[in-house]
Structures are given as structure tokens and as C-alpha cells.
Length: 440
Image 1 (cartoon, rainbow, N blue to C red):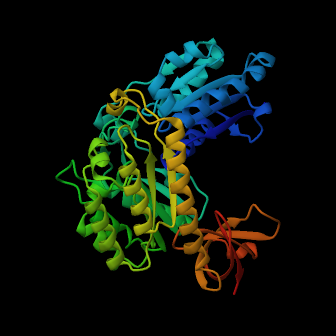
Image 2 (image 1 turned 90 degrees about the vertical axis):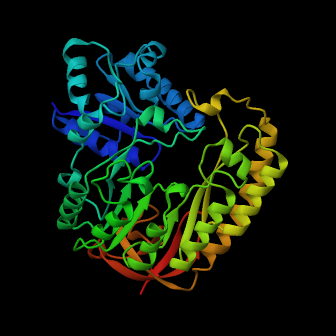
């Protein structure tokens, strides 16, 4: 009898990549993925704990699985990712019907853990951090996972910045960079499969190679990737502003395949708050880098993250963030109300901004950004843009979807043979999170 698993992924692209690896590993022990949780033999949540809301959502989902476990005691339920790394064995105590917990460094142990639960009905947890050499040896080459027009390629793991609000170094470990030769080899393998676009990902891709004197810089890595035959588009995320070097900015004027979009999280527009956040740059530093980016690539569009209501944020600090939003004119912005994360330096600060004040500041920033975003994306209406066609649209039958260089989804009517090619599409309408177009 076929064994099936249901997998839900929370959070960032790193978790998406980890989930692909989980699927590959489970296939090796005879599991097939299902989209129907009621029929699964194994339920896994790959979790995120960067925001308190995301963490609470995980506990909510686990609670909804309790009736399934009661009806089928043989059902295996597991939690991986950042919440698993953060909570460890305590998760097994908090959730009596949970069977296994695996941390961010222990995905490779998942098949053995699932087998142990199947055979011996034991409860397992693995959340130890691994040393650098072991992590590099276990780094998966995902070129053997076929399918898709676009792919994420992990070039580094962990983070050494220790921003005062951020839990990532505590749940992902210290920063390591993957050898550039292996990265290029994987991308060449993906190109041979027909992949047209790659996104280089890591917690802070801008610092790639910085801890290894024998390795090339991130800017040099981009130049090497750009030479891989068959790769027509190149992206990267996430970028820390303090490590956005002039050489990296220069790649936007040098590399034609580098897309006209950059996610550059600012977190706040006030220099005093940025200092309390331990971000390593000032408001003025950030704006200078934005100006240099737009000089190198005039039509670049930026997106960003902002935390509202960080401890000690005054009315003047909030006003400074509003003015920065207005000045930079982000294409899109991801706003979050501050919530303390356990183990971070900011967790020791008094969370002195009331929920009402946070909400009021959040609403003002959101209203301003919605107006700006609408103006930015509406400017595309009537223009013809090159769109990399990725697959079937979800809105209606006969529709395809792709993305512009600005990473905006465009839905349009077209035939399957177009998938994998770049097509001229005239934008006829801009919606909140996507655009409608017609093929020319």
C-alpha cells in the first residue's frame, strides 16, 4: 500500500527549499505527497518563527490535527523548521500527540526518524546544531530534483549579524557559504533540465564568501552565474543593506540577465532605532545605496520590510519611517508590528509601545504604501513587457502565468508550449498582487 504525506510550509524561500528536500528524502522511503490531509499517513509542518504570528499559526494548525490522530492512532505528525529548532523537546511536551521534531540542521535525519516512529512507536526529536564541515558535507545538490522553469539555489546558510530583534541566528545557526564551484555546477545542471531563471538565496546573500578568504565575493559569484548558458534570468534574496557593496551594485549595470528588482529590508527609517536594532547602517547610508542602485539600473524596483513599534520608537521615529517610504517609493512593502522573539537581545527591552499605537502607525504606513504601490503598478498598464512563462494560472482555465523582471505575476490566456519561454505581454490591468495581460 502506498504511504502518503501531507506537508505544509510556512515562511521564507529557505523553507521552500527545505521542503523540496523533505519531499525528496521521503520519496526514498516510499512516501508520496498528497494535498489531502485527511488521507495522509504522515503530516509534517515546516515552520517559521521569525514573527510571533507565524509561530502561533503553527500551534493552531497542530491543534486542528488532533481529531485526525484520535481517529487514526497510526498517523504520524511531525514539526520541522525554525519553531522546531526554537522549542526542541518542549514541543513534544506541549503537544502530546506529536511524534517527531526535527531542527533546521537535521532534515537529513528525517527518514530514519519516520522509520523509528513507524516501527517502534517512539517519539523523536533532533535539534542539535552541526559544525561547519558537517553542514557543508550534507549540503544537498538539488539539480537532481527535476521540474519547473524557475528554481531557488541556496548559496549560504545561517547569519552572523545578530540584529537585536531577529531570531534567525538562534534557529538557523552561524553563517557558512557553500563553495562557488558547487553552486555553479548545480546551476549548470538546472540549466540542462530547462530551468530558465535561478534565484540565489540565503539569510544574507550579500555577505557570501566573507568568512572564507579562499572564496569569491557575492558580486563575483553573480558574474560567474551570469555566464551559465541557458540561464536567462537571475535574482537574489535576501540582501542586508550594510553588506550591499559598490561592487555588488555595479553588477546591476553589468549583468543584463540580472532582474530589475531587489528586496532590500530597511526595517525602520529612523537612525536611532536602526542603532537599537543593531542593523549596522543609518538612514542616510541606506538612502545613499538606494541612489546608487537607481544610478546603476534606473528602472529597478525595490521592495522592503519594516517593523512598526520597535521598543523606544517615538512619534518622530515613526514619522521618519513614513518619510522614508515616501522618498524611496517601494513597489511593495511588507509591514510587521514588532513582537519580541525569545533569546534575542530586543526581548530584554521593555515593549513600551501599546498595541493601539502600533496599529495606528501600521495603518498610516500601510495606507501610504498602498497608494504608492498602486501608482507604481498602474504605470505598467498599456505597456508591453517581457514575461517568463512559468505555468498554468490559478484564476481560470486556459490561463498561463509568468513574471516580469520586477517579479510581478502576470496572468494571460495562452497555450502550454509557451511555458518556459519569454513572451511579450501587454498589461491591461493591475490588481493588488498581480497583473492581467494579453499575449502579443
